[in-house]
Length: 357
Image (cartoon, rainbow, N blue to C red; front, side, top):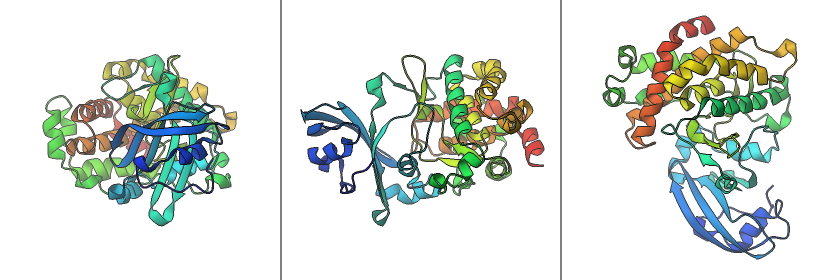
């Protein structure tokens, strides 16, 4: 995937046509890039850009998507996500049997604490990137749930733990920092749109007694390969209804329930989630391709799903507390309201008692 002579350019403007020709050579042999221009950039915890390409010979994609480390946020990414997890996943050649952007080149430079990925711009395939302000239909979420079931089945149990190419994948464990969130900001923004039980939660209650307790349960059952961050903002919908998943930086191993609950509960409106979640859980179970002896029971899936609300609620209450520093307020608010509603509807506290003892 990576030409050995390629190093990481210091900035998007330093990507030369010759460099890009080498980066695309494996997927587009004979293509000679004639020009590279920055069409769009979005620098946050990582640096991202859409690059427009022209060709002096052959043919290739008109645009590609580039992702690299922002040095100012390298410590934060290393703490919460894993600095090199996404490029390592694609360099491993692991089978990911759900829709995702094709990665043309991935480079890791640990001496500089840097990586660079050149990947498919899925918008060119007609992809519609989503966020919490544009929730999915039940049918679209069903497509996403089936994709996650295929991913989990491929790497369930010893299929993951016995794969030396994925030996670097870490367990999903609680990371530091959420406990410093100023929940009073989130509470003020939520107002009376959520239950009083949510507004009464202290930082210790939410981030230690609820979130960290749930995260601790993820390594207590059969592990699988987790996307790790499959909220709707890391998804897209293709014209045929296929749902794809972006941003694999938080790939981890652990219980299926984190991916399933985090995606489903945040991708639907509250009313649609209430009406369809039981059927969608059945959809997930039906899409698992495992021997009967390895299949989790419907009751196990439902219990893990109910407990998993702890993750979505903690992450988005913390993000909402940060103002507009990490995500737009309207995106944070929609997520916090959905997970807060699910926390009450699904009696997540009781589920945690049953799951964790």
